[in-house]
Image 1 (tube, rainbow, N blue to C red):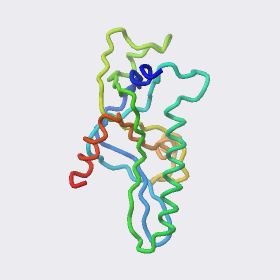
Image 2 (spheres, helix red, strand yellow):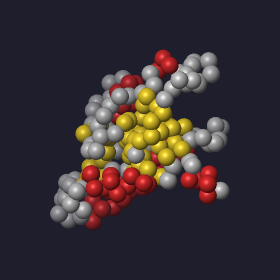
Image 3 (spheres, one colour):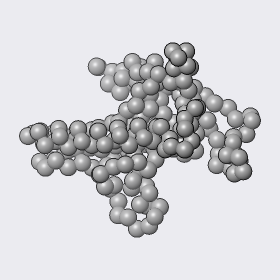
Length: 182
């Protein structure tokens, strides 16, 4: 069993070609209130909306989506609790992060390359190992997005959230890049 865990791989399909945007919550003000922000995040990484975990049960909701929903609920609850206790009106940023021992692989593929008949990728598809991926898709959240909903596309965008997925071996480097003085 240990060998299987060590060899675990998560495959992300990079269909967005965005290098740095990250949707996260900020808490601020005299009243506990959370806001959604869509900003640049360093270090840059690939962004993906699809993740395949080999061996996962296809009849259930994908594992990373379940983890992300639970993580977002926890992060928002923590943020609201901290803001309720904060008497200084301090501004805080909350970045949801999944750290895994799995190796992360990115597949840079266009929409048209995926077979509509089989759902398979072309045989020549290349996968690149990466230390971090921004997983972004419509996930659970109690916080409203920043814009006015005028159509279904905009409603979908407002419900999108980002989760950083990080390989455990890349954690020290990532933390140093985020805060070199830490």
